[in-house]
Image 1 (cartoon, rainbow, N blue to C red):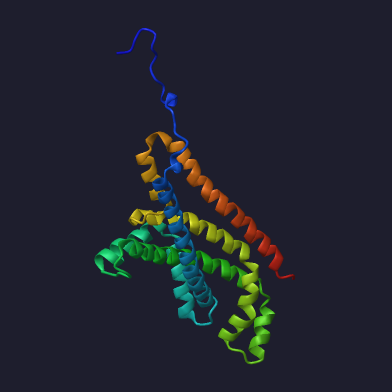
Image 2 (image 1 turned 135 degrees about the vertical axis):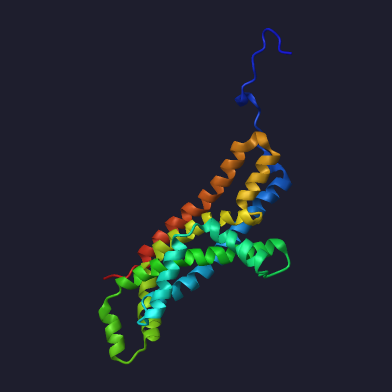
Length: 241
């Protein structure tokens, strides 16, 4: 029982250990979580870039059906929450349809996450590239057609190289958003950074703030220089009109 001179213990009187990450097992959880985020970002970004370029080509295609498919893709996926797409990849493709890439559950969840991130992010990549295509003077495409170049030749040789240089900064912003969106893959069981942080907090309940600051700080340390780097590259490679 409390004595006459005792006072109730305030929650902030608890001693919060600052050495959570001195434990090798905690460090392993932290590092593994961010390695999964890095892999998701790189694989999802590559898939989104390839698919986004194809969708952009479809949206500026002279064939109405291709334009319609590209427009429908962009409108559907840009207006669908990423969480629903990730859930569909797991519960729809994997659980219901039996789609499986590998037997290892973590790797399979990883690739399901990559599929979801790619199809979602490709819609934004498509619009960024299409905006870059619109910056290229129409006379260049007309001149290419006048000398007998096909639509694909005009797009790949004349238009896309210039459009790509014009959209470096927007693509950098999309990559940064993709990196943060990768934490949503944790909802299907992959031990990425958000799940790693949750497990560390559950095991070290009196160190919530230090754990949160370390994880948030890691994202900031990686993504802030990335944003500045893409901005510098955009200025360096900008097409002078």
